[in-house]
Image 1 (cartoon, one colour):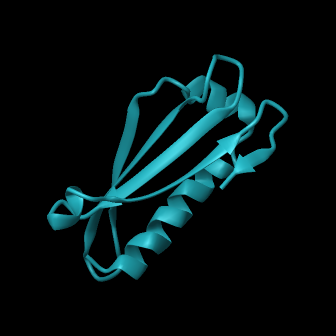
Image 2: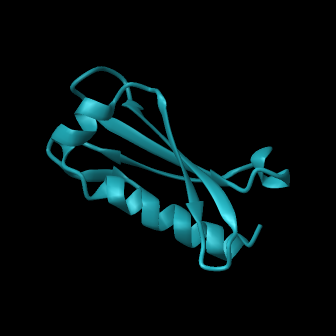
Length: 94
């Protein structure tokens, strides 16, 4: 796995969730994994997964945790990034 390529994809995919308003993230805050496969320009395949859930309690802060791996060795230790969004639509932790 090309780590720099994977980090770039991870950041781009996570930014899509970072741009969503709190109200949309609230509807997705189930703790269930949302996954998709991403193919790069050089035909490398990556598995991107995101988990959106409440930090402490419903209607509070929401944590968005994303992972990326290539289905091989990196699947045991995927790269990850996260952020927390408040009900006021503020990013609290990156």
